Structure formats: structure tokens, C-alpha cells
Picture 1 (cartoon, rainbow, N blue to C red):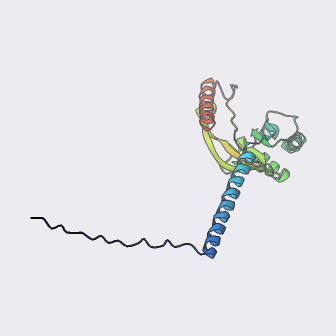
Picture 2 (cartoon, helix red, strand yellow; picture 1 turned 60 degrees about the vertical axis):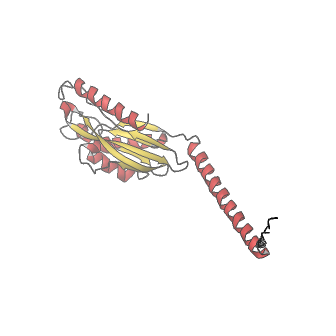
Length: 219
């Protein structure tokens, strides 16, 4: 006998037609894409300009200036017959201006001289000013406010005569025209004198601290 064979039926459904964006949707999408491209191009352009600005060469003048403390030429001082601090400060400011000094580190810059300088040379900003008292004022750093802006400032406790610590300034300045930055420090290590004694030990310790600190900030 023969076997009956069954026949199977297959059924399927045709795939739905894909939706095509309407012309106005496509146009809006293209506009958004082009706007995003323009924003990206503008951002990249600004970044390139900033990099170029921050890497362009920038020249400035730096000085160190021991102004001889007012107490040395005032009543009872050890420089009799020398001009007092007022005329000497006028000379100091004149020399800074004549030489186009943008950053200067002062030594022996006593409170009275700080007052003279700030009242007569308003184009400079200073750190630490009088904020740390009569000892640290002697080591102010001054910079032209139209050339640099202050980014960061701190001090180091430098051993002075007999190992007594005095906070001396370190500042990070930024060029207003280029955005380039540089660290500046102003240290004054103790001499050997009849009054101060032998300070070789403290000079060596101070120099080691200063070199290590500046190397850390600019390896």
C-alpha cells in the first residue's frame, strides 16, 4: 500500500515599507549637523589661538635691588652723611622706570620705604606688602600691573641670621598680553658680620631649601 503524504503550508508576511524622513525633517537634521560642525570648528580655533598665544615669545626685564634700609641712614644709623631714604627711593623708582623693569625683588625694603614706594610708584603691585609684618616686608617682590597679573603667591621660611626664620616670597605671575606664566622668588641669605656673626651654616641650609623649592616648581 501506498503511504499518504501530507503537504505543509507556509505563510509569511511581507516586510513593512521603511519610513522615509520628510524633506523638512531631513533639512532640519542637516542644519543641526552643520551648526554642530561650526561650533566644533570655532572651539578648535579658539584652542589653537590660545596655545599659540601661550607659546609665543615674551620679553621682560627683571631686577634685584638692595635699597639699603631706612634705619641705616636715619638718626642713629651706621651710614652717617648718606642721603636719607626719601631721596634714595626717588632714585630707585627713577632707575626702575628708566630701565623698563617689569619685576623687581627688593632687599632691606623697610616699612617706611614700602610706604614711599607704593605712594610714588603706583604702576607696581607688590607681595607680600605689609601683610606679614615688619620682617617680611623687607623682601617684597614688585611687578608692573599692566604687564603681569598675580596667579599664586606663597612664602618660604628661610633661615636668616642665627637660624631665625623669615617668610620670603615666591609668586607665579601671568603675562597679560600672552598668558604665559613664570615663577619669581626673592631670597636674601644672611651675611657674616660682626653684629650677625658667622652664618655659613644658615646660608647653606637656606640655599638648599631655595633650590629644592624652585626645582619642584620648574623641574
